[in-house]
Length: 309
Ligand SMILES: Cc1ncc(COP(=O)(O)O)c(C=O)c1O
Image (cartoon, rainbow, N blue to C red; front, side, top):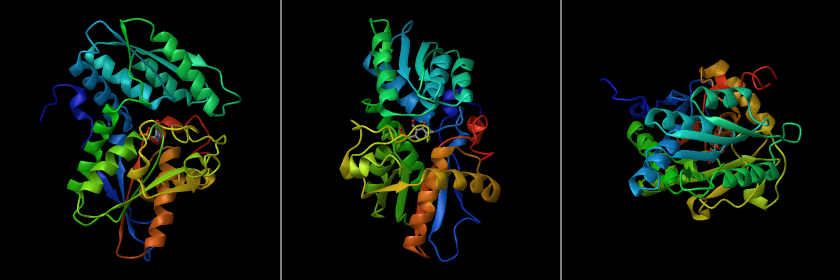
């Protein structure tokens, strides 16, 4: 089949059963490998949903500029969708995020504004400053701010990820876990899995050093894309059963094991997802099924110390 554009190649990613990492007395673990998306991340799904939602409502028209703030994955996905559809794209980002991600946004033609961070740390203050600068860019009717924290089209975009999981697996899913950034992925997948007959438990994951969802206390961490440390407009607390804090270092070690043992080359938040899945699969025990997501490709993290640490 010939795709009419690269936009048609978003989604339909593989669901892979772990062969070595899950001990024999634990639940089986299945991983949705989202690096197969065009920019190497599940954010392609939400970028397309935000752009097409705005087009359908007439909020985004030819000649306009899309503006957003991003650590890189959303920005790259938006820049990619805008490139194919012919919109200009301006992204506010920071030096706290991987250089590869900043360069990827530029490769797809995005213009970047960089907000300096405190020693590479991702903090709630940094994210808020990035949002403030984006609001300044969104000054007139020739710009469209996709506003990822508030944009409900994202949830629709991720529902497809949930439907794909249901189509791909031929047994009940006992538990799904995933880390929360905007909460778009968890909301979309949870909506679909909860409508299935499986009574899937949904577990939200967060960095243990920034346990905002579980305790209201925020802290600094270095897991890009998650643990924003403030109330999330998209997050409906009824959409999950429990929040788990996962040690960042455990997530990093798990990312390295994923590459070496399973050939799944992914990023830091994916390592955290997998560390959560391993913990929960041990608790559930044999005969049960756990699903999680490898968010993006490890290629984006080679400049940092994820794979050398
Ligand atoms: C690398 C990475 N992992 C996880 C997430 C979290 O996804 P969501 O925003 O759908 O909660 C993001 C979102 O920015 C991300 O960039």
